[in-house]
Image (cartoon, rainbow, N blue to C red; front, side, top):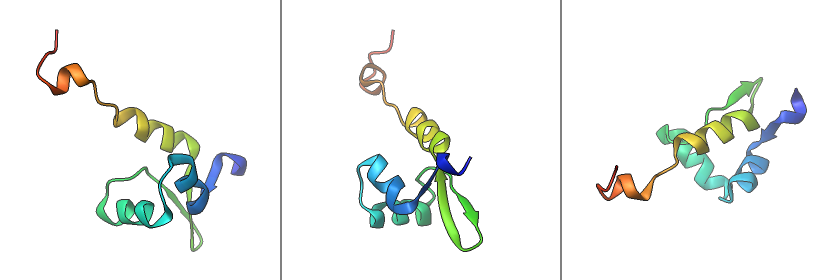
Length: 67
């Protein structure tokens, strides 16, 4: 299972953001869920992908053009 866990620097790279952005998201409760193992934060890839899926925006719905 550990090969499905990303360190914070790996998770940031996976998301295309810098580590500071990921830390800010963590502090403000906006980013993907993480696991704390001892003193280390790790991000399960499945949680990152689920967070991305929850963050999807449909442009038609956003502009009030939903069918």
